[in-house]
Image (cartoon, rainbow, N blue to C red; front, side, top):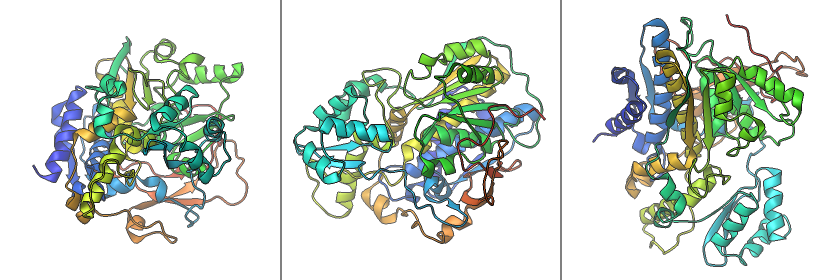
Length: 499
């Protein structure tokens, strides 16, 4: 099987699994060599190209439902890899950002039983929670000393009880024996579920952008959900990013993932602002959220409640470990899911083999070179949302879309691993993060201007950012890359009028 035919086969399988018309698949054009697009033993180039290609193809399909005309969608494998690492490549006023989204205490630590745990401390309350469990000073040395008193899985269990973000280090074999792996078995990476009846969507013809006139409420933070919202904005949707003024942000990610969106803030614990969100929902088409499982449902914004407020809505939900099993409420992020489900172990073994080193019983963890689970999940979510929008046009109804990082990991694992020589000998490493930027990055970048927003509270001269262009190239309707808010509260919580 050729490199490209495997990507095409994966795209076709997922497209058809979601009951979309097979004749559309001929319009997906994949190029480049996905197996050597990045130096990893896992088929990250395939995963990036497939997920981005499906999101673009679904957008083209929606436009064809509106106009009767279908266009081609092309994705280059290397461009797709740079796209799923986009947070590394943007600049503001020509400068690479100096801030990092990663807290210096986050990462891998050795444990008492000669194993490892990965800690996620990028939010202040998660950081403090870990320190409270360990009763130690906020230094890596102190944390390492404290963790040498714990077995890995015991500490993971305690962190789960305390609602903190920790993963014990596992091999694929160990993960396969875990009850959460059993609960996920057979779960597809994208699930579409009809949750209510509604008339067919009456959608106006559009000649400029596939999602023109589609309104999206984006209640997401960090990477996966925000990447999904950014993708929908690139296809022309009015995406309103709603964050809470009481929750910490991650500017190093937010500047990149909020491109093309409008941004506002609401405190849902305050009745008037909760009511404001409900009023927005009455006129929204998509409700996208990636908070902890059940978090928004407790505030009255679960899928069933949303379908009653707005019949015909598409409710898109992202979680770490899925909707069934003992870990369905467990908090998680890309790096934690990698560690828990065996990827860091398998990548370490492959790298050792490439270097001619003995494969030890428990190799030191090796992370994937990019946050692939996050980005691929974001693009799968964008694909699923658009597949659901298409269904509201062709058959009506209200729909829920489900994507979990663990189900995406399960799908990625199902693609198999490359030989160590292909992965680390032929695989192309990421460019260096340079100032000025690397020429490969520059060639694939787009320039965006800072949006003032309708609050008009931007002080000083407006900034300019460069960022990696969206990797899906639509042959007739280019993606919408014009403005970037570069801030989380630039707009009033209102919809733009229909044109």
